[in-house]
Image 1: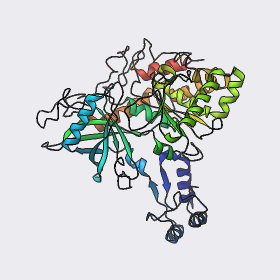
Image 2 (image 1 turned 45 degrees about the vertical axis):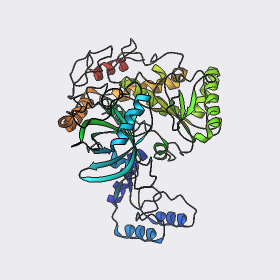
Image 3 (image 1 turned 45 degrees about the horizontal axis):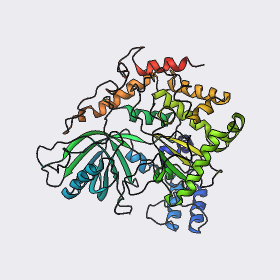
Length: 515
């Protein structure tokens, strides 16, 4: 019994984001017992949520699953299962991704780029995903270019087609949609359908975005996407061998599947609301003149782009406009009451405490850019609003816009014309929480972003990838502890100690001084 109690407590202590459960624990209460048998029976009778009821993984919920749960109960043995996302984004592993593209498809990608460098069009590719020798092969997946200002031609110069010898390769960001062309479960990596692959364009330290996403999740920001390193190869038909692209960030896309992974009662509570991608100048202040659109097959970009339920665009737009009108039009007392009703303010404060701690200036408050928002229902006023952090590479000392984001006042992070966060933290109750959450992140005992914790963590990650950084593009060939070359504070370091130059020490001093 003591073993079962300890196991149940350990699993219960993990959030749904840990993607871990006990096999047979259909009702997810931390153990396997008669209640789970009843839960399966309810599913068979169409009176319950199927959830984890397919215990024997045969694709059907039936009496065989009841028998398996009874066997688990009688044996007293419990199996802790890692689900798909934990398999793919396991920081203890270094996955390998091999992409093979037909020659005509690769040349089509080059032509698409030449016609529009912001193209979002997919080409056909085969993908092989390897972890610890276990391979998943997906034929006829979708491959496309990604990025905004970071967009590049993946090979050669304008109008040049693929060269099989002496190829002029360039590092680029890729998007993989494994089910783009064939929509079945075979075209996934244990259920994972999409991956974003980013090279370390503005991060010679090979760590910033990965560090920030993992920090946020450890700090209770469960909306933060998952991130891990991977090694990437690409081969175009006719090439003698694969081209090694080196170490990449492997990121969880923010899409309908991201929502499904977080639809428990303790998180979004559902996945059928409206998800928007927001890019500059998404200040949430010009509701009637802003650029709204949908995520379709075109190459169009929009300031506010609806990613889910695009057939309900007009309803989603009306909801977002109404939200902005209230955000900007309500008086202080009315605003304080309303924002508490429609927003998980505590989570938003934790999110912004982390954003400030890592120096993410290219965000909503700082630059009207790089965030997602999610409304949990399609009702114009009855919903919960969430802001989702995104694109965290310009952080940890990469400062811009004539500011030092290591020392910047956390209450003056961006212009007052971006009102959401500034209005919230002007409320005394929320101001105190905001300060508290920032201080927890940099606290000596937090294991989050104190110098003595952050530096060993980064060094361990560097040890894992350092032998694999050199690559066939000839770019970004070594790990260097400095911020992006274009930043306005080149003195910042992550690993070198120094009270005026080490990011973690500077940020702790700045946050500790906040009153």
